[in-house]
Amino acid sequence: MRTPLVMGFVATSMAFLFLGVLLRSWQVLVLSLPPLLFLAVGTIAAPPRPLLTAQRVVSRDRLQVGSELQIDLTLRNDGPNLDLLEVVDLLPPEFRLESGTNQAVVPLAPGETFAFSCIVRPALKGEYSLGPVRARAIDPLGLGAEDATVPVTTRVLVAPPLEDMRHVRFAPRRTRPWFGQIPSKRPGLGSEFWAVREYASGDELRRINWKATARLDRPLTNEYVGERSGDVVIVLDARQESFVGTRLDNPVEHGVRAALGIADHVLSARNRAGLVVARNVLDRVLPAFGRKQLFRILEALVRVGTGGQWPFSHVARIVSRYFPTDAHVVLISPLADFTALQATIGLKAQGYDVLVVSPSPLDIQRALVPKSDAQNLAYRILREERANLLLQLRRVSEVVDWDPRTPLALPFRRLGRSIRAP
Image (cartoon, rainbow, N blue to C red; front, side):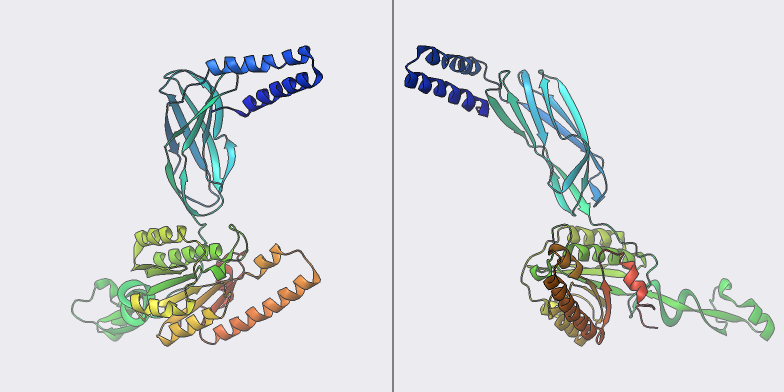
């Protein structure tokens, strides 16, 4: 492959040749020969095709948005001598280079190795592939080049930032037979005192109320509130209608962040959690316990992208088909249209308890348009429409109106009480 420098020399030679003929001057015609001689010498010294082996090492293959990732790349020349080698380790556009470099220009002798490293910071969640490595050998005169691709790729999973929900009181209203951390208002295994009853054969000694036994002169046993677990189904609205803003700042990305934070909070309290994502298809993760379930939900959320025209009002049919009716449904939607209200009513009609978490798109929309009187008027109209929709939703379910610029725990605390019924 010829470099742009070749075209420059050819154009220079042709210009002198044309000018010499036009002026009928042999001196000007002679000036057209040196560029041609230079090109002839460059043709003899054509560069060889690079034959390289590359090894890439990353500091970790799973990280959060905004975390640092170190990439170390080592190259070995398995081919002929390379007088000038240009190497680029391709990175996704979502990765911002913090320090170091992902490209280099070096000479490389046969069998010689060269290493360079860089630190990058991802700005968007997703599943990314680092690489391949592009190499170009250039001859000493810079006239010819030979390209090669080293097919070494590395998979990196970038998770959305995790919301801190440790101080949020959120739990399903209805419990299941499994042990958990939710007081079920029935006697059983737990830590909250319920009542005192007569001692029965087989009661544990640590449950005997010794003070009451001594006072009434008969053995008495403490009863505790049985603690059980429940099911939570997270429904994420990722339809095309929900996309407002940029790739980095839009309600769908904020909804993914909220879904991951709620799933982590629910699973940490020993409840079951499931996921439904509404976009061009309905993705689902069936409910289960534990940290493995959190990773399953994380894997599904990392791949969430905006798109699709699936009718959101059909969510109730899908939820009722795959999830029990005593589950608590958390509906995450920017409420871009009234289908969220229809979906909430449909879920309530099926017997589900519903909590609506709505990342507000109004401030995102406002930042995209230049400030003007018309923009302020449109903002006030949209704000009133959203307030009217929230008012209708609050008649049938709990609603969390969330400004994505603030932590998710803040609007939960503003509810002023526990989400679950007393």
